Image (cartoon, rainbow, N blue to C red; front, side):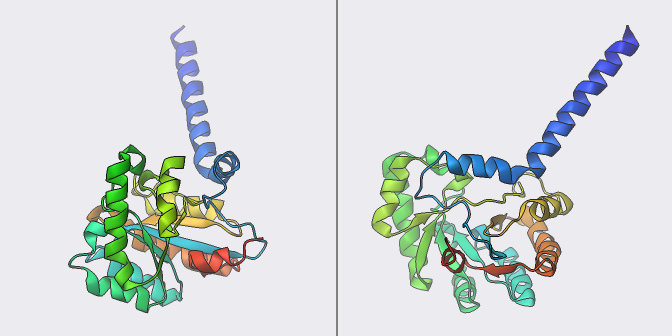
Length: 239
């Protein structure tokens, strides 16, 4: 009886592990399912056969991590779109100027690193407007990404006067939750297809792995024939 119970538990654990692996490494199918059942205004990926992809970096700027990220992008000549948290602009103005000067673009990620969908309409509008005011002096802002990736129709209505388009993305390697260079890199390489939008994170000391992830994935994807573009550049290929 004990042996049978152990075998049953092992089978259950094996099944759970297999399900977890399937979920993580087949994330693009989940992303497509969500995309197909959600709003047309929201960008998840771009329909293209060209091997062009976009890299997006959330939650910056950060005085130490952002320069390291920018150094890697410059090394491989890769543009990116930085979704900026408005409260982190003050004191990092030189970094904001560097981001734009080096060919990257800016997006609005509100004023704080919190679930945007949990904000009431007035607070959402306040954060949206304040972040817009703080970010736009450094360059054009066309994109909005909600904190934690959840949105609703009311939020989409509130961003329209700013001429923003909401961007979720297609390849999210859980780097903000699982601080593993190997896992995030494998996830990205296993799920990237033409038109993908990759999400990585800046903004905190415990996200130093982002630099190593970039060192891993960029040359690997370039070797496969992929070219990186900003979100604006990628959406020009929309078919």
